[in-house]
Amino acid sequence: MPPMTNTSDIDKAALGRLFPGHVREIQARHERALERAGAAHAVIFAGAPKPVFLDDYNYNFKANPHFLSWVPLLTNPWSLVVCTPGEKPVLVYFQEKDYWHTPPADPDGFWTDVFDIRIVHTVEDIARHLPQALNKCIYIGEAQNDAQAFGIERINPKSAINILHRARGTKTEYEVACMRAASRRGARGHRAAEAAFREQASEFEIHLAYCKATEHTEKELPYGNIIALNEHSAVLHYQHQSLERPAAYRSFLIDAGARVNGYASDITRTYSFDNADYAALIKRFDALQLSLVAEVSAGMNFAELHLRAHRLLADLLVEVDLARGSADALIESGVTSAFYPHGLGHLLGLQVHDMGGFMADDEGTRIDPPSGHPFLRLTRTLEENQVLTIEPGLYVIDLLLADLAGTPGEKMINPKRVDWLRPFGGMRIEDNVRVTASGSENLTRDAFAAA
Ligand code: GLY
Ligand code: MN
Ligand code: MN
Image (cartoon, rainbow, N blue to C red):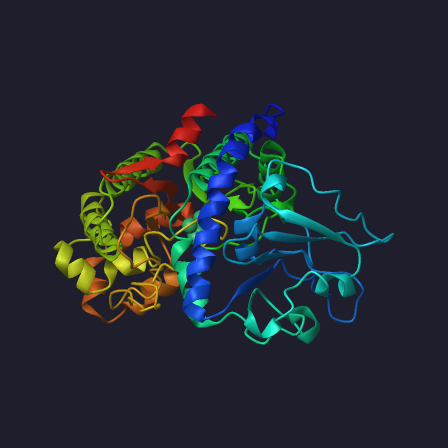
């Protein structure tokens, strides 16, 4: 059994000290967005519950990340923030009188002082706290129907949204502190999950051990846990949690994160059960991942780092006899992409895949990924205080290897060695790093060291 841990080690007082500066920055971003959109007020809506078809309950509520950038209210549907340049932001706090559900508690926490808080109990009351001139408002959020837009016509105007999405790539001190805490929370879960794997638990049991150690209910997780034993490790977003304990334990890939005040960690680790050769390959791959992290620094072009990962992987494939040929040939023939078909990393924050990874500027000019690499989600130049993942992978994906049949790539692959690797599925190592002027801070490695 993993030891009981608890989230009381999150330093709320320290977060509280950083929060006013964070909101000043969020306000400044919205003021720039308003100016660009030629509007006077921004109304940032948390979102409304989504009912299940033909039934009377709702899907898990996921708050609008733009709303969460203002205030850490993860489970407050119908609340909203009104931002008017030069004024204290208004938080319309929706507290429905509801005896079917527990309504939100009264506002309480380090975040309350920075808002002019208006508590409302009915949807009709919300409108009374909106600016009079609705035609001077822009609405930021998802409006599933007209009632949810409150009569505001300009919904998510591109001119404003581009500024907000691009700005969210760079984290405030408060956000970095939340993300460090989310990494520590995730690392505790990863330790417990590895222990459960060593005890030969099922995927489902490992998932439960993870939730227990992170103190997350399943619906609070930043994304569905990927808990993959043996061949399942080759499925990039393996979505099941098998109740069966497999007959033999060979490998374990876990991609699982945690959240603090809405901010996510996104962490992957891969383990060998008792096969020394596979353990050695993981160790070698871990060194490759760390060498990529070591290259991160402000000013770097991330697409180039992604291509560099393919070069390093080509060398590794040759070194461990999975393939033969020059790095150029292995890349051009599609061999490295067959073993590693996803992007090197992505921006991380209130969303696991934060918006803005392709944006060259505030106008939203798109920087496409390099040809042949459609799944790379971060092409923009790295800047200080961006937080991103570095997550190279190496898998046996027969669907992709089959595509190489009859091409020059087929002859470069060593099928015997692929047969050896197949029962282990594959590996991915994923860390979350903050870009600094001269390098990076590895939130994940720091968190494992502290766990
Ligand atoms: N957990 C999804 C990803 O790594 O992007
Ligand atoms: Mn991940
Ligand atoms: Mn990721």
